[in-house]
View 1: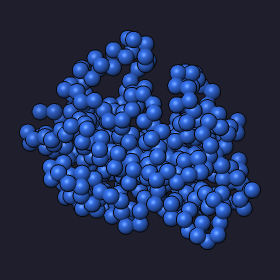
View 2 (view 1 turned 180 degrees about the horizontal axis):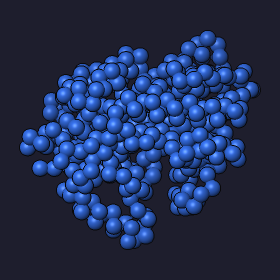
View 3 (view 1 turned 120 degrees about the vertical axis):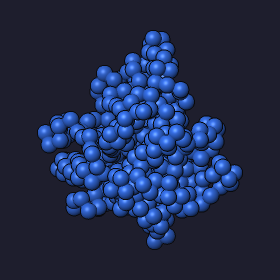
Length: 387
């Protein structure tokens, strides 16, 4: 029998950097911005593809409480450095009105190669996400659980949505980030493999052909990490509020342990056809939590609040095991008040109804996201919007 995994957790978040006066994404980062962040945070902070983005990642954490402490520390310190440059941090997966292709990419060999290879596709990549790593040391177990956990990925996306706007327009989608992301190769739901060696053989085909250097350029919604013994969930938008991020991360971790418990008892979660999971992925992408997802067993669309309660029942033992009931049950608050996408849309419509111009309403959305990104973490200051 496979030894129980460590189920350690690590969370990566990608933030956007905006000018406090214009509310727009910065085109180029101040020369010393990343260096100053690293002076405080070391390797826990890195540049992203575009200079208007900053990525942070917690160390390996044994508990969600520990992960919370690190994320609070990371958001606070990055925000303080950013603010010292007259800028502001926002945790959302798209910017409400920034125009694509106007931001400079980070001068780095890996990013230069991506820019050359992917052309206009990568120039649209002004999007941010959240990645959650869960420690599963056995290679074959990681592959087995990856195939089973794919079922729940749309449910996690729906709860995290924070990207309803693109280039100044209400896209009608709760996670427009997914539309941008899916233009890249090697994205979307993962393939299903019977073993880790089978997975590696497929990766090696692409490496031998010179298409990719290694598996870090496989960008599926979930993947075995190339650098760590973890199963990395990548489907979620970056959550504006920290509590929302911890809820999504906890749900993912608990679901993996539930699947492991099934395996330990010689059972397995049913593997559904990719076409069915893709349909739920689209529904989460388009509607978020608003229109429900398909229950494949019942053959009908079920309201998200009902699905969420079913999820909680299935992972109740794991919630207790990880001592994360408050984090997981916070999902009920998200469902009641809406995700960041809902809050952004409500803010925009309220501003328009109050007589604001489209530009002013979109700036109000930026202000909301900036404040919510640091809610309960630090105070921020904003100036009047520059015309």
